Length: 511
Ligand code: ADP
Ligand code: ZN
Image 1 (cartoon, protein in one colour):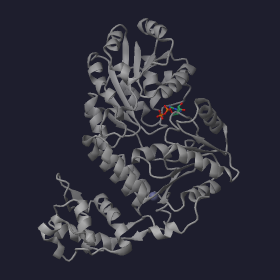
Image 2: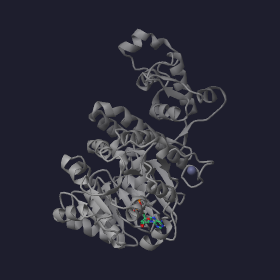
Image 3: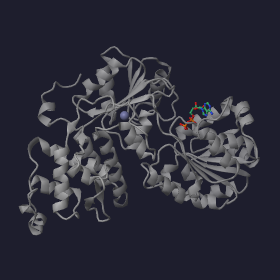
Image 4: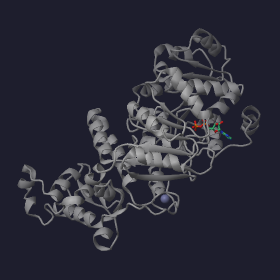
């Protein structure tokens, strides 16, 4: 078989492959269908760019974002790869099509909506193809956090060219999403290659919001290098930038509502800077290559664990120590649940599971990295020693007693009711259902009161995470193997939860 190493060195100037790149490239060169799950920065593009140079014909790359495509185009052309993009904003489309048909392109980048048109299928029939590369492949899955219906049309398109290889790539896929991508894109189960997700130089820290502007200002004061602060709304990024700028640090805002020229300038200034703080919506960071970002702070809950991993992953690409701080509140969860209520019914279960996983990450008093990596299917042999909890979290609460009450309520109601009902029982909230079931006379009825009330939901999530509780197909909770230890063997359940409202309200407003 062809040895890719000389081409890697000659064309890309890299001495060797990184991580799983060698395995992925070997499969692609052998024509085997592959799904590569690799974290951001691991070098996914090389996995199709290199074969595109070595194989005869053109590699068709499907990518969902035009801006990203143009970045990729520039970097491919910079090393002498013959590449072009075919999108609605390209004015040289006729020329590109000519080059494609003439076999003068190694790479052709297209958006998924184009890939699904009949016209395009015809065009593909008129050229020699070397490979289909599907970037951001999680978009094909309803389980993924970014479903795009156009991706569903890729498989029929690729099926029309059965002899052409397939490489799907994503940075963000939990086990469920991965299985779905394999199925939706016609890739065999043994075609899955997962790279290591750990970013050991990033220190994770997660805490409750308690005057978040001040908390972020503290993070900035302690971290003099360049950093990104993610806020949830455009207005919030501007307010934060203004407030934080008063500390004397160069600070900019970045969001999709800013004028394109301003946005480009803020991004360029940030990339060039050694101490700038950029306050951004999640639109920021895709495709930017700044290895020395020293911190990423979240002023509110990210969309999912995948999003958190991706956003924090922009810190410390150079391998030097970096920190990731997340501040969240119960209100973030309330808003997230409300949003879930607004999505199409068939996607709600997936979204709820995703939110639950995120809840478990932020509320745990155990090792954050362990939970994060477990989400991507990796088991950490021991606690990481480089997250807030491993380093001794000041805010952990022992919630063992509440956990025992929770488990008792599940047990005494017959291990068949969902979390919502168990909460009603614990809080003693009478309903027609609780009356009919005769549960109001149980010893656990209304057993949780006062400050302990805020622990109930987090405890429910923690019990699911520890496999002390499991959900049956009807959504009812039943005991899992972890229940016994908590009820009988002295296992402790500790959590980090936001402080009660009164304490927060008394603080001074913003920085
Ligand atoms: P991803 O798409 O996975 O986020 P990229 O393809 O953008 O990652 O690659 C991230 C960086 O790593 C780029 O600057 C790229 O040039 C570099 N890179 C990729 N492969 C290698 C390699 N084998 N050796 C050194 N650097 C590499
Ligand atoms: Zn840890």
